[in-house]
Image 1 (cartoon, helix red, strand yellow):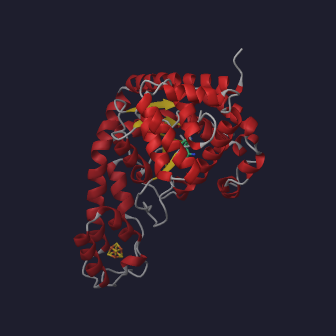
Image 2: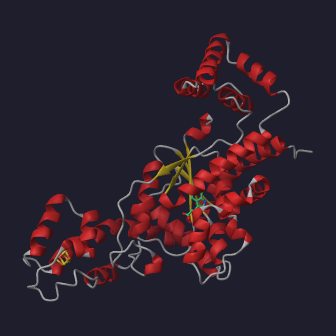
Image 3: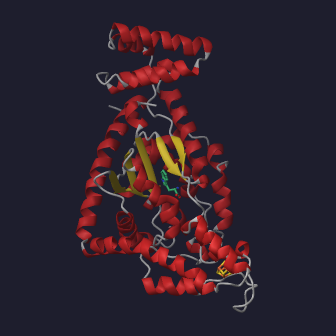
Length: 402
Ligand code: TRP
Ligand code: SF4
C-alpha cells in the first residue's frame, strides 16, 4: 500500500430514490465520521444504478441531486470530502474497460451478488454484459483513487475482494519492467545510506524468513520517503514484497459497524419493503407512520400484555433508547402497564429531533441548488485530477503511450 492511498477512503452510493433512516444509520453517519479521519472521496454511482435500471433510468436522473442534498444535509462536508458524480469522471469507464481485458469471466460469474441479485430482481432482465461487469466497474472506482480503505456493508465485501484480485493481477502483468531490479536498486540508493541499509535488511528478513513485522516496518519506512518519486516508491513497495512495481494498491474493506436499522414492520429498512422513514419526510407524516406501525399482535386491547421481543417498536428502542428506557418498555409491556402509544412516543420524539436539523439543512440546499452544483463541480474536478494521474500510469504500464 502506498502512502497516499493508506489514508484514502472511497465509497459510492447508487441514486435510486430518496435516502432513509437505514442509509443514515447504516452508511452516512459513518461517512461523516470518516471524513475527519481520512482523505475521503464519495461519489454518486449513477452508472452502477444504470446496470439495474437501464429500462427506467428517469429515477436515476431524479435522484442524483436529491441524494447529494441528503448527504450534505446529514453533514458530509465538501470541505472535508470530495463529492462527485461517477459519470462526470469518464476515466472510470476507461479503467473499467482496461481491467476487463485481464479479468477472467469466472471471477465475475462467481461473485455471489451476481446470481443473488438476478434472482431477487426477477422482474428486471439482468442477463446483461453491464450487470456482469458491475463489480469490476466498482473495482475501477476504487483503484482509480488507489483507495486504501473502502467502507462497505457485508454484502459488498466480495466486491472489494475481487478488486484486490484484479489489482494483484494487474500489477503482476504490468508491474514487471524488464530492468526492474536495476531501477529498484537505483531507487534504494536515493533514500540515503542509512535508510537504504535498513530497507535492504528488512527486505531480506521478510523474504528469507517471512517476517511480517519486517514487511510492515519496511512499508512505514517507505511512507516516510517523501522525496522519492511516485514510481520509485511503487517499485520499492513491490520490491520489498518480492513482486514487481505496485501500480494499483490492494484496498481493504472497512466493515461498517452499525446497528441493524429496522423498518416500520421489523424487517430491515428498505425501499423495496415499503417500510421506510425518509430523511426528509414531513414530521407529521413521520408521526403518522410511527403511530400506525404494527406492534406485538397479541396486544389487541390496552389491557392485553405484550412481548417486546415480538414487537418491531422494541427494535426501534434498541436503536434509540438507553438501557433504562428499554427496561421501562419491557416492564410496561409485559404487565400492560403502558399502552403502545406511550411506548412509541419516545421513539417519535427521538426520530423527530434527530431529523429536524437534517431537514433544516436540506432546505438550505434545496433553495440553493446552484451551491450543490458547484460542490459537485469542484468534487468532479478534484476527482478527474487524480483519475488523470492514475490513467497516465496505467496506460504507460500497459504500454499504451504513443
Ligand atoms: N455497489 C455499491 C453499493 O451498491 C456502490 C458502489 C459503487 C461502491 N462503486 C463503489 C461502493 C465503490 C464502494 C466503492 O452500495
Ligand atoms: Fe410493542 Fe411497546 Fe406495545 Fe410492547 S408496549 S407491544 S413493545 S409497542
